[in-house]
Image (cartoon, rainbow, N blue to C red; front, side, top):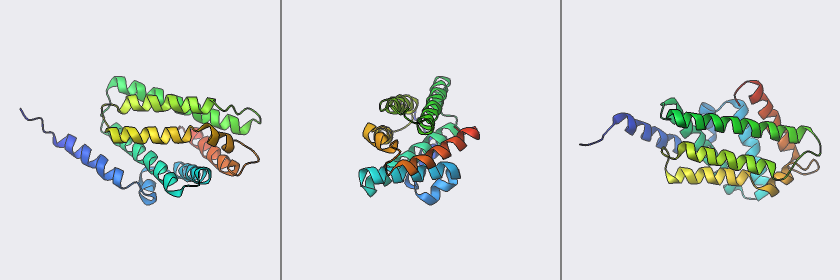
Length: 186
């Protein structure tokens, strides 16, 4: 018996189309202004740290693609109850990471080089488990790429250096994270 489902086909097409439209103008349709500003600052941090514009664009584009695809899966109720528990664990861990990032910024001399990378790796692993049955290996690679990129301890050390060139970006990122937390979005 053939297992054709127009609903599955439509979902697949929607994910494919959205992944090809991960441009700045399309981001504004799916991501709120504050999140967009945070993404812009993350791009600037990446670009300044790596000195590689195309790599920085790619990592942000991958981040957007993953966020949009997961949003589509969620809106189409594709996650099982067990996966929804993983999603909640991911959200909680991400919130914890945001609070830690903000705390390191706001309280002098509290930054610890290994803490944020550990949190980001835990987030990555939870997210990979969540989408394991739903996204392609290419999308899994995008998740790996994004989290590995931003969990770079040396980049984080430069970001959290109050005298460093990345510090102004951190200020804007933390301001945005605080706003998302206050609005209950993170």
